View 1 (cartoon, rainbow, N blue to C red):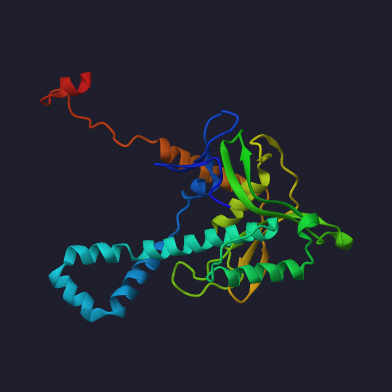
View 2 (view 1 turned 120 degrees about the vertical axis):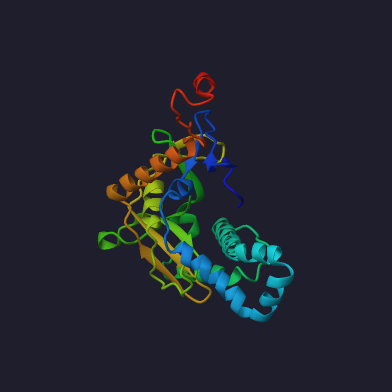
Length: 281
């Protein structure tokens, strides 16, 4: 119930070490960071504007007396919100894993409403945790394409013909606000989420507790489980070949950007002063 064991933070974002000793594998979320998110800029500006409007007199006074410190704080407003949301999401994931495994979890009043909704979802679908849950918080790998990621929940649900059980890969989502600051509808799916689930679904191997790997089971369908303090909704998300190809394109773009040089040479005429020195360098 911590960060994935083989995940490491680098200057280029999260990568996974391969326990078998192969090349590092880019994380799925890191690869998807190459996708533009145009709504984030107005959202960040809106968060800053809200902070100013909440106490305009104090902001005006500080703009005269300590402008540099004020600017630093205003620039960080959206990051603080993001960090709080990420912290809550991580704790909800940890609580969900503890629920499935039947192990204790420290009291966390902010997380418990989400845990109750997850428990309600388990009851609604009559999920037997010992029988129907295939895996939880498990890392999958695609060594051929060079990526890895950690899925939330693999669970069998009676959704096939004649209530035949199908294996679902379910990703928990807890955010309740869209990037533009409005309340997110229960059925909101962001552009990168189908690509994320496709990457996890099509990874051929997953890691076992002893750090060996084995073929991952065939996933029939994928979904987001939107958890709110007072409601929940399971949203089926496409994760077929089209989404997988789109993910691979995003991954290649991210890798290119990670490997691109930070500086490029300046070209000058051969008769310019110092041109021979630059050529030799």
